[in-house]
Image 1: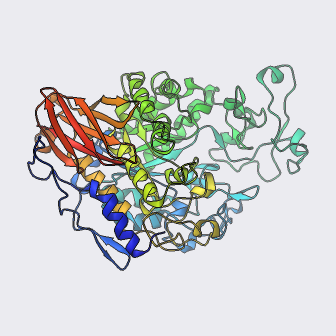
Image 2: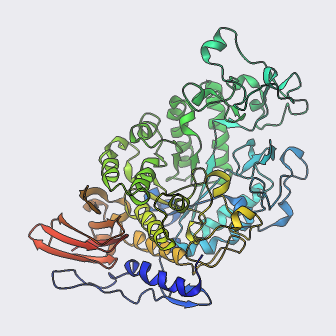
Image 3: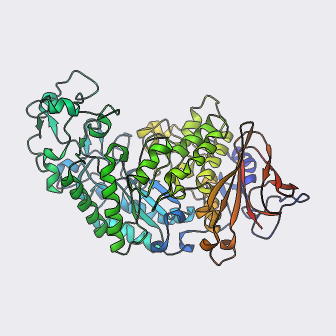
Length: 619
C-alpha cells in the first residue's frame, strides 16, 4: 500500500522506462539518446494518477470475425468475483434447489454476486484497458454446493444447456456477447469435458443411500485400477434418491458413461480415470461419450455464437478424444461463419514436449503455455538468469503443424489455480520491496505481450492485486469485498484495498497495460512475427529477441510495413549492457528509454536500466 508521496516517487522511478519515444522518426545512433517524452504525463491528484494519452482499443482493430487469435489481448475473468449488475440473481435458481444458495460475500468459498450483467456494465473499462477478447470461467449451471464450498467458480456443471442462475440467464449471456461484439471484443467460454458435478456415489464409500462417508481416509475413495476392475474389484454406483435426473442432457445421468474407479491421486492411471475430489469422471474413451460431448458443444456454439473455447483439464482426458473433438467443433463454428473460432487447452505441465503433444497429436490449436510462465518465474522471481527462456524458445518447433505454432500459445503470468505473479513475488525468499514487485510485475507482463504468444491478463492484476496463495486465495473481488482475508492484502501502487471498488482506470499498472496493448496493436511483427533469440548469456541479465514478419504478411499502413522489431529485457535489478549481433545500421526506439549504439557494422551495444525493457523498429 502506497501513500500519495510514495505513489509519486514509485511512478517516477518505475514508469520512466515505459514512455513512448517512437511516435516520430527518431533514430538511435552512437551520439543520440532519447529522453522521456511527455506522451504519458504523470500527475498525482487525490492519490490517483492521470494520463493524457489515448491508447488503441478494440474499436480500432479489424472486425472481430476477421481477426486471428494472434491479434488478441485476453482478459481472464471469474464473473462471480467481478461486478454485481443484478442483485436479483444473487441466490441462484428460484425453481431448482440444487442450483440455489451458497451466497455469502464474507466467505471466499461462496458466491459473491458477480454476474453477466455486471460484466456487460464494465465493457468500457475493459475496452479502455486494450482488451480485445474476454475469457470467462465456466458459466453453465452448477451444483450450488458440494461439501463446504459453492460452485461460484463454475467447474461443477450439472446442465450443459443452461447458464448458471447465479450469473443470469441464457438471454443475458446472448446480450453480453452481442454487446461485446458491438465493441469489437470477442467472448471465449471455459468448457469442461473431463467431469461433471459430484452426483454419482459408491456404496462402498457412501453407503446404500449414497449419503454417508464410510472410508477412514482423507484421500477419498481409494482409486481402483483397470486391472482391479477387470478382476471384479470394482465400486458399486448409487445415485441418492431424488438426484437421478439432475444432469442435462439426460444421457449424462447414466453411470455407464463414467469411469467409476474412485478418487484420483493425480498420478498414473488415476490422472485420467479418477474422480477429481469426487467429481464424476466422464469415460471419454467411450465413442458414445465423444459423440455426445461434440453435440453438447456444437449446440452451445449454435445458440450463443462464442468466438472460442478454453478447455479445462485437457491432460486428464485421453488424447484420442481431443483429436476428434477439436476439429469437429472448429469445423462446426466455421460452418456458422465464425471462421476464426479458436480453442486452447489447459495442460498443467511445464514441459514443452508434453504441451506440444496436445497441439499435434491431439489436434488442439493451442494450449496455455505453462512452460513460459515457469521460465518467467525462474528469471524474474527466482533470479536464475535467462537460460530457461532461451531453452523454452529453442523448443518452439515442437508446436509446429498444420494448424498451430508457437505464436498461438497463450502467455500468462498467473491464474486462479496457482495464484498471481505478485503473490509469487511476495512469498519469494528475496523479500522484494513494493517497488521491486511493481517493476517485476510490469516486466513479466511485458514479456507476455511482446514475446511470441498471445497475452492474457488475469483479472485484478491491472489493479495491483496480490493475494495470499492459489485457488480461493487468488480469486478476489473487483467489486467491494467483504472477505477479511482479501481486505487485509496490500495492493500494489495504490492506497485502495479489495474492500473498495477496484475499477480505477488511472491505476498506474492499468495504464501500463493499456500502453502495452497500444504498441502491441500498432506493430504486426509484435503479434505475428517469427521470434529469434539474438542475445542470451549466463553472466548477463539481458535477454533480447527479434520478431520478424515475412513480407507477404505485411499490411499497407506505415506501422504495418515494419518487418522486424528488436525487444530487449533486463531481468536484473541493476543496469546492464550487452553487445548484440544485428543486421542493419539503425533502429528506431518505439518504447523505453535506452541506448542502442552501433559499435561495428553488424554489432550494436544496448544499455538497459534495471528491470525494464526496450522495443526498437529496424529502419
